[in-house]
Image (cartoon, rainbow, N blue to C red; front, side, top):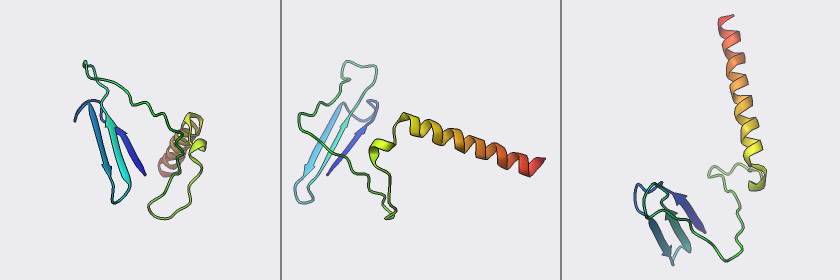
Length: 89
């Protein structure tokens, strides 16, 4: 299992720990306006399977792209406006 993150250079440029007993690998890289910014390139095919920690079933990760989130937040804002209308009008 991999935990991959970015920290915008706040903590460090590159962070890597492979925990052999648990088989978890932690990777982070900093991107900031410094000479140490960079990315991590992976040469192995990797698959991602979202796991919701409460056991709720999730959509495939491929379904959660930019279009999905744009629609999600558009609906969320629309619901806020509708709640305001019900409350104040």
